[in-house]
Amino acid sequence: MTDHIPSASLAAYTAGEPGLDDAAVWAVEVHLENCAECRARMAGLAPPPVLALLDDVQVMIDRGVRSGPGPVRRRTWRRLAHRWAVWSVVPWLTLVFSAVLAAFLLDREFPQRPSLVLLLAPVAPLAGLAIAWSRRSDPAWEITVGTSRAGLELLLRRTVVVLATVLPPLAWAGWLLEMSPALWLLPSLAFTAATLLLGGLIGVARAATLLSAGWLLAVALPAVLTSNLPVVVRPSSVPVWAAAALIGAVLAVLRAGDHRRFN
Image (cartoon, rainbow, N blue to C red; front, side, top):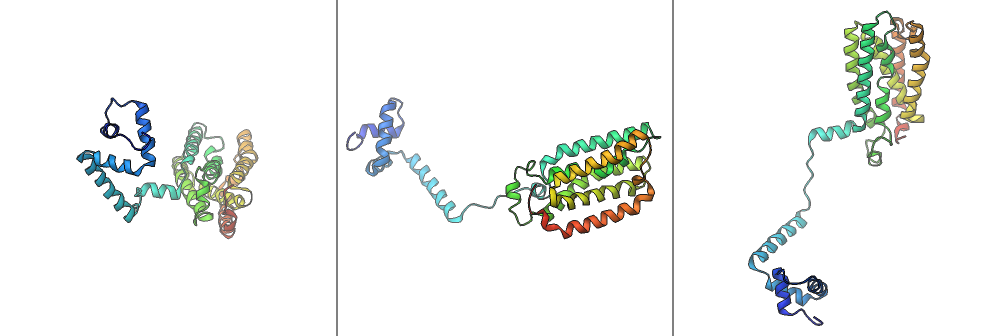
């Protein structure tokens, strides 16, 4: 096989005869890589069904090259999910649901003690925010920050998803405990706005952690230890919470440029 492949060996290779040993197959393939004449001879030895199949494949390849790949069809719910949420937030939301349920059960069992639902409401959405806007929890963060919607717009989308999943169980618990919705809703919105505002400076995850720790240590823990309902969660504090939520939201929008990156 110094010049060209012998006709018998080429015919056996083309027909795929099992009697052709591995060394002979290897020699034929090496020669075919560099010899156009033997490749043409092999094409003439191929049976008609193989030639017809090759012709069909060639037609489909040529058609695909001319037309290009078609658009990838994605289901609507998947497209919306990618725009509005990140899947890594699901375990944290499950944890929040469990915490709200536990707080509700304890409030029903010990009605004389400060309401744990009220003490939990301000910081309930913050765990979801910390996960929804963090490079450590979003595997696609490099792609996300390079899109035109990156920044406050995308962060607000994910914040809406977090609030839409956290506020309903709080509303359910507050309704069963006969609480005024303003007592748990306004603190939640105020702390959410404060997290967005502070998160533009130090990172959303750090801001959520700092505000949550400050609230739990300065308000929730003393209330549980002393069995006294703090002034900040009494009905008289509602106007202050409303003003704080409004001012925090306005300032977060004005500082929208601080959220052009993940932290």
